[in-house]
Image (cartoon, rainbow, N blue to C red):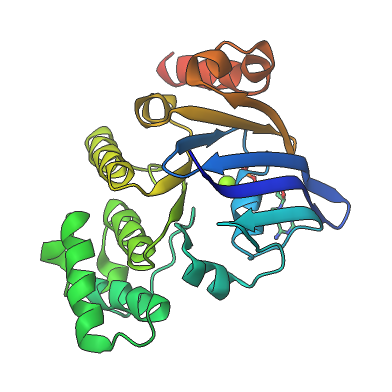
Amino acid sequence: MSEILRLQSVSRRFGGLQALRDVSLSVSKGEVIGLIGPNGAGKTTLVNVVTGVTPATAGTVTFDGRDITRVKTYRSARLGLSRTFQIVQPFAQFSALDNVAAAALFSQPGEGLKAAREEARRHLAFVGLEAQSGQQAATLTLAMRKRLELAKALAMRPKLLFLDEVNAGLNSAEVERATELIHQLAADGITIVMIEHLMKVVLNVCSRIVVLHNGQLIADGQPRDVMTNPAVIEAYLGQQYAQRIGAHG
Ligand SMILES: Nc1ncnc2c1ncn2[C@@H]1O[C@H](COP(=O)(O)OP(=O)(O)O)[C@@H](O)[C@H]1O
Ligand SMILES: [Mg+2]
C-alpha cells in the first residue's frame, strides 16, 4: 500500500506544555486507524498539527508526497485533508443544506451554488439528514449536528478524513448508525484516522491502532497486539475499564 501521510519527529509546544513529543507515524492509503489515549494525550493536537490549525513546532508532515508542515488549513483542506471537529461548529443560522453547500463551494470554488447544493443533498442523504436539509443547523439535535459535521467533511472531497470523537454523546443506536457510515466511507477508499473512546467502535472498524500518552506515541500496531500491550493497559485501557465498572456499580 502506498503512503498518504507521514509525520516525522513531530512536536508541538504550547508555552511550557509539550502537547506532542517526537511523534513519527506513517499512514497508508485506504487504512482505517484508531487514534486512542487518555484525555489531554494530544490526539486533537495531532489533528490540528496535520491540518495546519496549530502547526508543528518541530518535525515535518508530508501528505501525498508534499511537505505540508507549514501549509495553512484552507490549503491542506483543498489538497484532500478533511476533519470533523470534536466540538461541532456549524453556521448556526444556515440550513443544514447550506452548511454542506458552503463546504462544497469552499473545496471547489468554481462549482457554483446550484451544483454545490446538489452535491450537498447527496452528502445529507448519505448521513441520513435528507429530511432536515431545510432546517436551521442550530435547531438540530447533537446526533444530527455530528452527522452534519460528517457531511461537511465529505463535501471537502477528502482523501484522508480525521474523525474527532464523532460518537461522543450519542446513544447506542446512533453510534451503530455512525459506525455503519464509517464502514461505507472506508469501503469507498477514503483513508480514515479516527479519535474514538468507544473501544467497541475502534475494534469494529480499525485495522490498526495508534496510542498517544502525554504527547508521545506509545504503541502502533494491530488491534490484538495493542490491546494486550501492558503500557497501553496501564496508560489508558485499564482506566477505561475502571470507568465502565464505576458507571455500572
Ligand atoms: N491551543 C492550545 N493552547 C494551549 N494548550 C493547548 C491547546 N490545544 C491543546 N492544548 C493542551 O495540549 C494538551 C493536549 O490536548 P488535546 O490534544 O486536546 O488532547 P486530547 O485530544 O488527546 O484530549 C492538553 O494539555 C491541552 O490542554
Ligand atoms: Mg480531543
